[in-house]
Length: 596
Image (cartoon, rainbow, N blue to C red; front, top):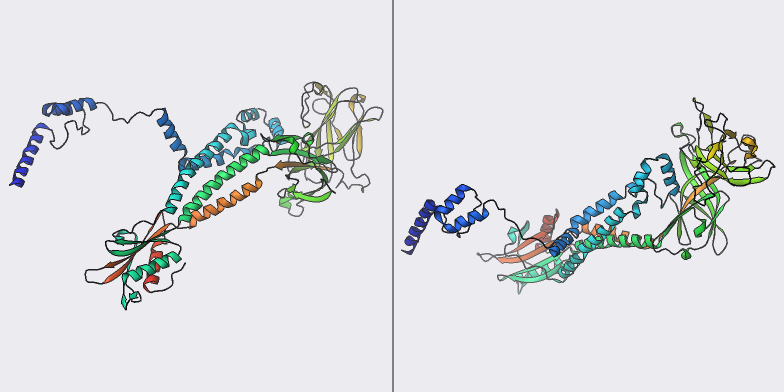
């Protein structure tokens, strides 16, 4: 009777709902999402509360609560410390480092920066405004670096706490229905699991627990609805490796930051036979870290004894291509001089500094005399290579000793060849037919005001050109051992031969070479190596250690028989899970030794 009356009441309510458009089972202010005149009319006809709700929602979207300043800070922090953001910042850091390999950097190749400005007078200032010549110390690169640092720490700390808690926790309870898991098999109770002559499930579970423990699992015994079982899990080294990877990555960032703060990088061009002393004043350019103290420089002397270059001579398609460069040096510290060698990819490590061979070229020895024959200038001047065959350009400045200040722009051709246009070029990088041409200028060199000037550039704005160009006077052309008169009776210039006693036509060693060295000190190199090894080890662990859970349960059927259920579950993709469960079940049920 009650059921009949309830059904009649429900039918009456349904009829009322059809008539009024109101569902009696829903609250009066329920909104089904309909808006407009029809919804409002239906609500008005049936229920004033629903009409009011329709009026409130007509045209108004559902909005969440507004975030205050603290809420926005929390939201920003959660976004920054997400692993997705950390990976994105790591990718951005790699992309941001690309310009550092496309354009020369002041920290490693200041001469290249000067040359880039000379070759690209319009583009270079634009790039410089974006700090493209100081990429690794730029504001935008440092911002990405620091954000990545903060993001990684924000990821690592909570994950480490959670991981330690998981390591101390017991393996989870055995599920009631193992057959629902993706890897599941059944085996009959082995006859060998016997107590007092009869096989028992307790003995089988005890042996399964021992086998799983030998295989590296953490085990825990449970009884599920009176059925004995064992729960086991392993693979926590996967998460440990993941945390080691990210922690070591932070370590690399910290080490690089410390190394950049307390280290330095300096460049020096040394001509064969000349020396360099590791003092601040001896560098051509010097880039110290923010916390570097120049009193920490270890004094030593580096002498370039010989620079040997080997070029391809047999393969016509690669004729003149460089094969090897070897700088033979002598280094003197507290004791006797020691002979060393360094190559392009084989730096020299001495007295806490790494010495790298960056580049090389020729340094013709040029001597200028006044009209009375007195030497007013003599030096081996490094000429900067302009192409693969070492066509080179250099500058000679004679500020004193002559009636006027004299500057000369020189072009050196190791193997001079004349093009169809009449212009000179070099057809081979070695000294076969060396020629030096000089365009002479007189006037103000612009050095009396004390303004620093590049030794590789000549400001001719206040000077008069005497030879070459539009002067109508040929440039001075010299071979090793030859000399020529300077215009206007200023004196003479000589291209000295480094091997005057060599046989005629043998110019193989007539012009000394120079080498460009980069001296680098980084106190964090060892730590970077340690953290790099940890990164590799952590990555291997996180990739190849599977995270698995395994359960074995003894179940008694309705007919009185007992079977052993084996099931496994993996965290993430684990293609070997089903095979591992089957192999363990076969080994355990057949009482075979389980592989550890």
